[in-house]
Length: 210
Image (cartoon, rainbow, N blue to C red):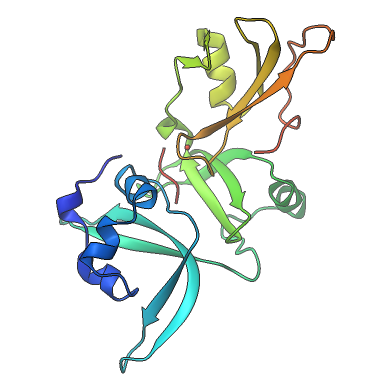
């Protein structure tokens, strides 16, 4: 999902203490917003009724209204996790440990379908994304993915690949905290045998995040 810079809701940014010039100078965070992702954690001066202000740390994202205009989503730092997905105690522990959940959830269109869930450790927000919105890459690093490997990645599993040079194993997995939607972790091979297994627990932890 991509947004046009001319459609940004500058009046809403002003309520956070950012004028038009400030917004246009956000650099990487502006690029993240326009590509449908969240900004990094920033400190904002929020305007209250009566003109008073207070400072808070939050991330920002954009969403499109029914009339096609854009509005800001503010993702504040929470003292505790808001379990708005009805996660079990075991699932919450997995999220706290950096794990990824894949299970059915009611989407914005009212239909129940598979979603990814992951914790933003900086804000304590549970991130959500529909599985069907995940853009599966054709290649990771220098390795072209097969149809089976793409499906393993889509299912939320850790995908293990040997680099073309043969000197490292690359482990990839869906990661909602990453702008591109997945993370990779290369391991140098020190004479160990090649590992081809897939396990969702082997490493720490994109489409739009909500």
